[in-house]
Structures are given as C-alpha cells and as structure tokens.
Image 1 (cartoon, rainbow, N blue to C red):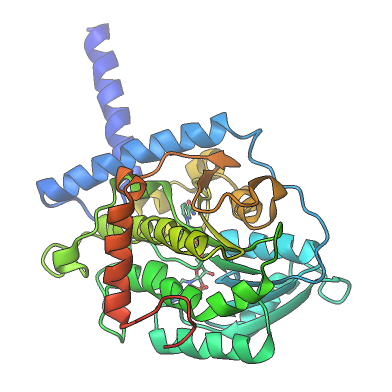
Image 2 (image 1 turned 180 degrees about the vertical axis):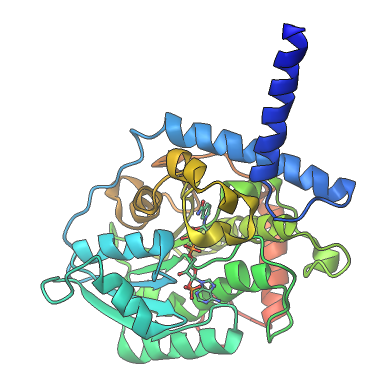
Length: 355
Ligand code: NAP
C-alpha cells in the first residue's frame, strides 16, 4: 500500500514537472510534438545541472576600454540589458539596436547612472527580423563610425506561434538568425578596420544549448509543412553555430583580426519564456534559473576576455567550452548552410558589406 502510494506520488510529481515546463501552453498533439517536448525537458535538466555545477567558473573580469565601440541587438531587457550595463562599466561606447529606442534608453537609465557613466550609450531603431531595418541600421552605424570593435548578436524570440516576417521567413529563423547573419555581413568591414594583431575585433552570437537538438530543414526552412515552436527555435540556434564556425574559417583564411564566438548564456529567468508553460511557476524559475546578470557573464566574457584571444569559432557556456551539435564539427555541413544563407539573401561575397 505504502509502495503504491509512493509510486503514485512519484508519477504525479513527474507529470507536474512535465506540465509546468512544456515549451508551449498547449498540449502536444502528435508523436513529433511529444518527442520534441521530451528532448527539451532532458536538455533543460542537463542545462540546469551544468549551470549549477559550473557556477564558480561563470565569471567575467571587467576592465576599462574607453576607445572601443560595441554594437548590440536587443539590450533593453533580459540578458542584453545586463550585457549593456557591463560594457558601459568598461567605459565603451555602446550602440543598441532596439525596436523602441526611447524606452530602451529609459531601461538602461534605470540601472546605470548615464550622466556619471564614462561609457556612452546610443539607442538606434532596429527590427532585426526585418531585412530592410537591418540594412538601415547598419548604414547608420557605418556613417557614424569608421570601426566597430564588438558586435553582439543577442536579440531573440523563443517558442512563438507560427508567423512569417515581411520578407517571408519564419520569425525564429528571421529574428534569431538571418537578420544577424546579414548584420554581421554588413558590419564586417568596420570590424576588420577595428581588429589589430593581438586585439581582435569580436562577433558574439548568443545561441542556446538547444542547438544540440536542432535540425536544419533545408526542404522547408520555414516549417510550413510541420511547424512546432520548439523545433523552429532549436533550428535557429543551430543555424547560429553552423554560421559562426564557417565564418571563422573564412576569417582565418584571410588572416583577418576578427574572431567570432558563440555562446549559451545558461538557463536564465527572462521574458523569453513568455510562450512556455513555465510562466505558471515563477518561483521555480526564480529558484533554479540564472538571473539575467549571471546570464550576461559568458556573453561579455566572449566579447572581452583576453584568455580567449585568437580562439574564434569556440562555443562557450558558463565561462568555458561547452558541448555543441555534431554537425557543427563538420566543416562541409557548416559551409553548406553558410552558402544556403548567402543564396537566400543573394550575397555574392560575404563580408564585403554590400547588399
Ligand atoms: P528577453 O528578455 O526576451 O529579451 C529578448 C531581447 O530581444 C529583447 O531586447 C527584445 O526586444 C529583443 N528582440 C526580440 N525580437 C526583436 C526584433 N525583431 N528586433 C529587435 N530586437 C528584438 O530574452 P533573453 O533571455 O534576454 O534572450 C537573449 C538571448 O539569449 C536570445 O538570443 C535567446 O535566444 C538567448 N538565450 C536565452 C536563454 C534564457 O534562458 N533566457 C537561454 C539560451 C539562450 P523587445 O523588447 O523589443 O522585444
């Protein structure tokens, strides 16, 4: 009797854990959706253990770099806001590409004394899911600055319902990946102008541990035939890694002083989870997820830490190397996807800044 009660309690607990950590508020409808949910749950548990295990390693030392210019997408909330705070503490000029520049400046002003700060903040309009907006944003940066030292591709969405952008791309693919792929292409000449021997300019792509379950669906990149938000998100996060790895190969071949790294920031308590079932258990997130401040550490580490100078193409998690998708270890797979992206955007020579 006691044994049966124990099992009932155990199964009940497992069921509750499943219900409150689903990627969507709806119930999975097919085996494909169930499978995706189980894989997310597994990665979520492993991710939380990794974050707890490596908490002591998850550090970044800030130092003054007043002559450096950093460009970040997003930054008005969540992890990005804490990245901006740290870059300003390094006395950098920080250009934020955001959808609402006025409220973004107010958000930063609420945590940083902008009058006293030696760092300089500039907020520019950008919808990274809209290719025309990316082009206009890059143009304004190019007109204002002859060099860009850091580009942090941070903005992102997760588990959103199916939606096509004005350019006809699925919203995760467009926002998390394609807009940033274009932005990096447009700003590369300015990054190359900033990099020097021993002091590379850096691109940091904020990906996620769920790249491990990602798959690039070349035949149906928008997921028109079978859309599930979790699948769209993991595809976009794998895309960032494949592109990072091939871009570094290109940069190495031309001996350029630019490095590109990719980061999993940890599992962080932010509004990114707005579409997931975890919104019903805010206490769980508060207890077990990283704070946005902790979530920003490895991203800033990838951007400024001298110990990884010259180590482009690395996937970082909790202040060190982390496990990533086996496809990203295969140069031909990275190149195939990179070329596919160039074809989508009709880019003939990646990195020449022309579009
Ligand atoms: P968040 O709090 O929801 O912030 C998302 C940021 O992206 C906001 O600044 C948002 O600006 C911006 N953004 C979204 N769509 C945009 C668009 N079309 N144009 C311009 N900006 C846009 O999420 P977060 O947790 O800080 O996420 C930051 C990055 O970390 C994302 O790339 C995410 O995938 C990655 N990440 C997060 C976690 C986590 O556990 N939180 C884990 C792994 C990876 P608006 O205010 O205008 O929407």
